[in-house]
Length: 307
Image (cartoon, rainbow, N blue to C red; front, side):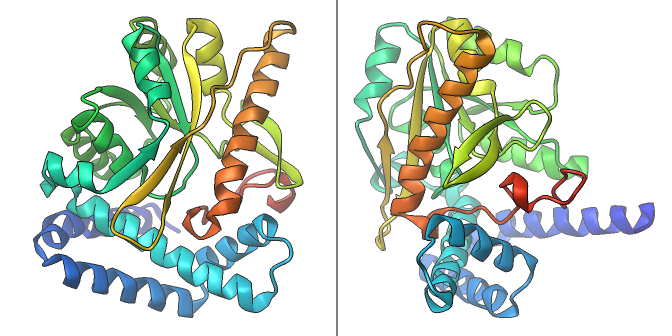
């Protein structure tokens, strides 16, 4: 595609997101929910690349599922994914009381007790449920500011839109590809702060290979490295929807830094432990895992790149 075509597509995408944040939040909630369910079903019926990839990923999570079960899961998955967007477009208008009433997190004491003691916390999450709602809950109900990173999206205006949205929810947002991001995260943790990272996919050369549902995938090294270098507590967190307006969450037991081994060996072991915790949550709620891209190395093209 020509540069002009890419620019036009970028402007169109940016405009659609702007429309979402500008219009969807003004709709009555039942109308917004019905609209996004309809959109989800229409996208699912078209059987495009994203839906087929979601189904392929779910086939690894639920290996004994037949075609009918996978279709059922992928349809529910698209509805879950669209619920994420519907809620995200409306989140800026929600009151602290509404945010608190919309999420129930089990074992949150694992986060609060560490922070109260002055220890930093790295919360690592997969693409499950609505991680933006969880972030808004942390800043409003727990009253804990936190730092995260965001991928540099194209066009720049779209990236700016996402940063402004998340900053409006009380998050400090750093660019993912900025050289200073890791150092800033480390400083926040050494000061006893909270860092939240979505950490179930990293196809870069720095990604750590893990066994995930019986095959090899890559996940980011950042959470494990930050915990090692700063003494922060590394906590896996999983989220899911249960058919009610209230999202559920689970803070899993901390991932310990191994007492022996090289930094590479420690990072590999800790990232595998994260992957295992993520797999537990995903296996229990596969329809809420919003992985519409290639993840496993065996699914990549021969050059090792995901399209």
